[in-house]
Image 1 (cartoon, rainbow, N blue to C red):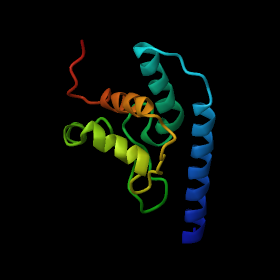
Image 2 (cartoon, helix red, strand yellow; image 1 turned 180 degrees about the vertical axis):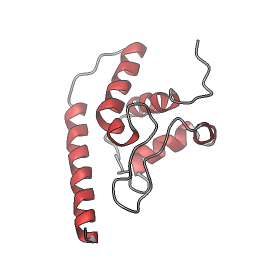
Image 3 (cartoon, rainbow, N blue to C red; image 1 turned 180 degrees about the horizontal axis):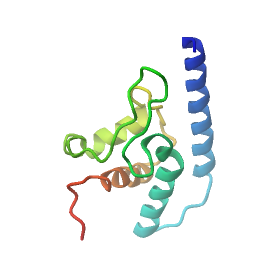
Image 4 (cartoon, one colour; image 1 turned 60 degrees about the vertical axis):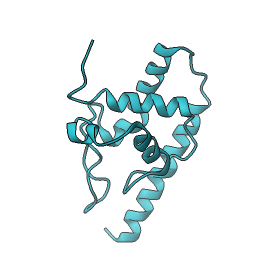
Length: 126
């Protein structure tokens, strides 16, 4: 496959994801802490799990020669990233991960960070 075809597929994926996010953002979301966690889990399942897996372990690279999506179950990854760094990667993108810009509110971003943190193998469960 040519580089132009890979690039075209990448642009199509990003466009599709952005349309999906805009559609989700227009849905009315319930309020409250439990509802926020539920909305974050749904967003992760709908958008993030396509690449990172529903189990958070990552998946196959989007294109030949590119890195695999981040494994959120990696304890070293969890320990070496701040919540703010995770939010910035979601907003700005990194490597093959698309930038989601301002499509997520601050509350949405915080919910996604909590969802990412839920995969931490060193996380203490109550």
